Length: 163
Image 1 (cartoon, rainbow, N blue to C red):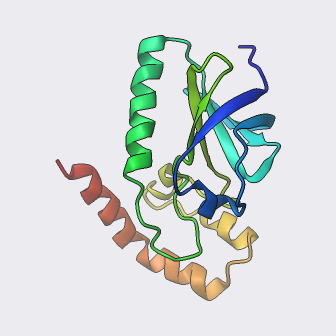
Image 2 (cartoon, rainbow, N blue to C red):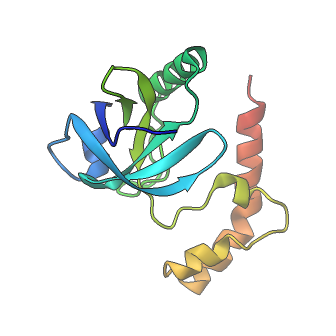
Image 3 (cartoon, rainbow, N blue to C red):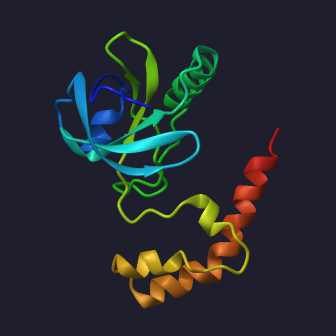
């Protein structure tokens, strides 16, 4: 799918604290592709090295409307970071629109060295911990993470089970 490289952003009130700048541009330019999946493609942002843009692959107006409402709700319900000064969640920082004001996706923080939740939840698979090691996490902290990962998994499961 061919897309323009410039997009308009409607920033969340808290976006400044995540991106380390006092001035957020109203229009941003996507750079290289960082990743992709079935529903979207993730791009770096030329003007903001600490941000990524997730652009949905679909052109279906109904599906895009549903996704837009979901992102708006997420922006209103941003969770509190458990560790001050550390970004834990790749939470939406703003709504991304094309030149015709159509919803296209959202901006999120670029968390280098992040591990996808789905990788962590695989039973008895600790391959993801090598990513932490590669980013310089000390061996004693890695062992603590491995010892306590079961508690984290139980917490995630309980969150998913909540009505």
